[in-house]
Length: 243
Ligand code: ATP
Image: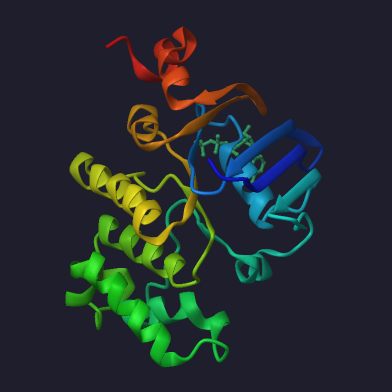
């Protein structure tokens, strides 16, 4: 496996006076898919938000490759090569699918030509034909699964080296959820993108991950290869059932 693309050191985070992350260390290597697992309220979303610059009340350090980005605001982090697809997607519901996608690439222009970006957009449409069919529809008229595809497509157009995905299958029908996770795998193989994934469905997440971290009330309870995590008795009883 490659060298570290993301390093998080001793991350603590607060909401008001209440500390909810108590010193998290985490590393993602180039080319990996790494899952963040844990029950509701364990701190997964807060950790992603600390990494991508959305959560300010924190101590600790975040490194993207050899640059420290701890205090870089979210809107600039994307220019450094990290894209974040938040929980519940947050696409622009009153803009067309096509305009949503253009927005993903907006910070790369004019350095990257419109023509070049249109080419990349064609690749996104190829992977998500349903978005091509609906490119002139407003984002808000898409189904949940289609909106998730749009959010992922938009993130890809920022050409990230590292993609943070927060619960991409949340609220989707099981078959669509499965498709979304298959897409995550494809993104890694086709675009070479490294992925840090928060996912409720631990079994599905571990099936596509190289490694995982299990958070419990703001600390790392367990970390290791997906195989190791899958076979840990605590994970089996808390997150995987006994099958
Ligand atoms: P979920 O799967 O439910 O999203 P999570 O593992 O992502 O859970 P977080 O959402 O990061 O967990 O929450 C971590 C802790 O921080 C929880 O105790 C939660 O109640 C608290 N918390 C989250 N958001 C806020 C907020 N805006 N204000 C106050 N406390 C918050």
